[in-house]
Image (tube, rainbow over all chains, first blue to last red; front, side):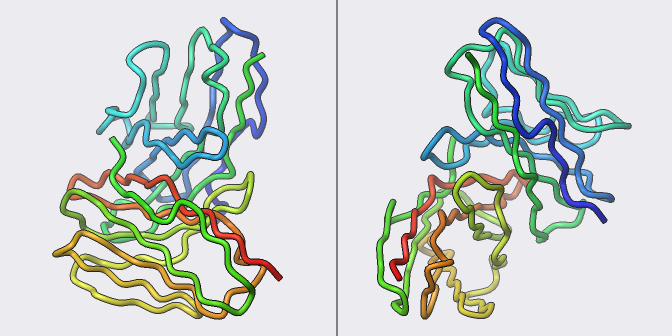
Length: 114
Length: 110
């Protein structure tokens, strides 16, 4: 059972381009969380999704950011028209449907906007 | 908004000493989890404590939870240089959101 897979591990984008970050949850997990981590800082919650549903996107910037978790395929975090301030590590975590279980994290995608 | 708040922000100790980190949170929770992150890496789950539990042990780790004070502590006994990392608490709230604090950066000097 492979762990949470994020790709790419490193992503470089020029200002104004789009960034697509992928997260494949662990097999059997139906909850996905996305977090952003700026250098030397903690993890900031962005969005919580279940299959085909956004449950809580209160941590997502209102513009340029979107997330989805389709019925088939990975969860996608999409950042349009990237700016330098978007440079960060983006982590996703997945957990199963059952309550009181740990979440498993991917290794993160490090986005650099140049 | 963030849920957990860890303190101290940074902690530096000698190998062999104990390290205690604290976490406070704001809303009712189902459980609280502690994670470790080595520099530039992903997060590793350490321990989960449910809201009806008061204390939990795992190896050199001891976690306590006080729901009346909305706080938890992580104790690492007999620390080692390899324990150097950032430690985060995460709260699983009633709506199954999982929120993290800013973390405690622990440095264990050999």
